[in-house]
Image (cartoon, rainbow over all chains, first blue to last red; front, side):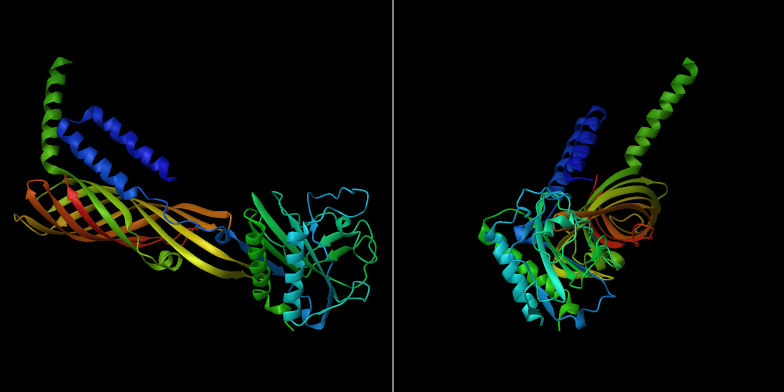
Length: 237
Length: 194
């Protein structure tokens, strides 16, 4: 029950009682009513004071994937912006990108944490063991199964018609209402056949209010990405 | 019809005056301390609470009463990782539990004719519980009714017949159900008897 509803409820009871009770009782009940309002005045205590207190970091992984046997990774130099489930090709074959103000920080932080966990960065054409695919969205849903065509511009040996596949787990239950999310997918680098789904052995989501100045948002992204690696010890070599 | 009406009215008047002498309304400030499963979720003492009771004297030694009230439990939990299976989620949590008991019970008065009357009682009823966990931008809500047994001990000081103050300790022992484990708590009550 909401605070206001309960207080209104008390007020309603009080005003009904006025009809029935004598003057003395009205005084007593008024006192009781006022006292209850004072006691319950702050009936929803606390709550978040700072925007970063609303930040969440969600990670999930496939426990059948052998992370220890993988050592190299490739990562694009931009973060794609997912605007919906379907990819609307703007002509260049590249989707809209997140502004480099944020994108560069996301990429740099992912590289820093991958290095700290013992992974070696290689180019996308050097048969990396895994790819790290960073994306961001400010939509009401997080699109875990967004159109693979978003990555057509980057991924070597790309086939249209691929889908996503989260082996043995569901990526997350977070939805992105009023919020901004950074979605990081770690995918296996082995070559795939047309029509296959792409396994995503590790998923990380950083979610929070997409508000504040860029410095503030970037500081929260840095903390969030570092936390994603901290709570995923299986990525460490 | 008239003949029947007059005795009914007289009975009504009599019972009203009887009730005015023999019944009390108790309003207390309630400080609540979580126990058991509730204290695992929120360990902080709650200073936001109220208890309202209507008591009817049956004999010199025995009162019957009905009570309700409202206790608000709250705690902030610092950034922490919660893991279930392969999934982990971290963030700050704001935890709330609203407890609204509705209890019927009896009180046994030990004090005889003196102004200071110790009492002990036992009540049965239900507690409406509303649990909110604010986690990031999301709120996880559970609300449920649990069966409750409520023993109590206290002292009532009457400065005039039927008027006084009260200091008591209650224990709300709630039984778990499918929604939540039993959300039990102690409550210290400082009240006025009207």
